[in-house]
Length: 356
Image (tube, rainbow, N blue to C red; front, side, top):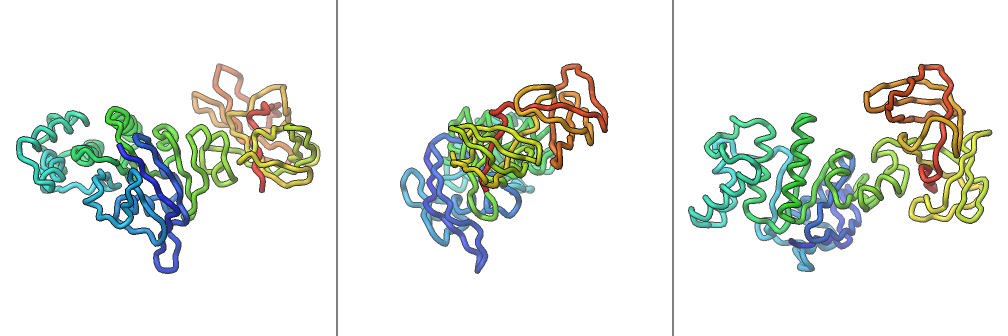
């Protein structure tokens, strides 16, 4: 297991900025995810760690050893690409064995290591199959076995599940996490899928337009977004314009509309930012943080849309001039209709304040 450190790393493509001033420390054995929309710089950052790109500025270190300009084959990394990059003319066994053969290991050692890797990804009976005889999920497991068989210090995965259907994605997601925990290998994972990032990661780095927006645990990213982008990109959130009208100690009262006020806490602000009266801010309220009925921060609205999912009843509600999404867990409760009035309340801990 090795640590990975990026020290003020930037990458330029001509006059265009690919990645700007990235500072991260990935701990040994950590599952660290780069998350963001297409074109945000996450794959560029991964490719610099792999050695396929060299930074325009900054350093990359493995266990405090500078590998910034070290060739990819000297870094002892395992890489799983989005399209798997398997050799179609080779068998499963031959694909997995490729990296070991390049390292000029003996046939006996290669056989032992490949068979162990096949067992690890549940492909023991597929060694003689050609790649085009496998399903997408099986091909993905071959790519994973090929990356792991060389016993890498660091495992890099670039959108490895994007070509799989939803059910297979979920199964393979669990398989990758199981292997990572079992082997303890330092893993850096690239995805635009929030569910993958939230369920698999020890920590997440959220990126936008080449710039790091926030680094934290899944709980920190979800419950304490540092800005509007993170709050809106991670899961669903009601982002409402507001004005601070009163501050008493940690209690903050904000105005959402002419006659709609809610109270939050200074402890529930992005980066612990202190707010002041008259300041324009944004209020983030997750749909699942809103409850039907009377209680703190109570408001009344009109239902615009109803969606029944089985697990939950999802309402789109007009509250004053604002539109709010509300998720009520289905406990056999009555389902209201479009046009019905609904009373809602939000506990103080469900209100997160984001300064402009």
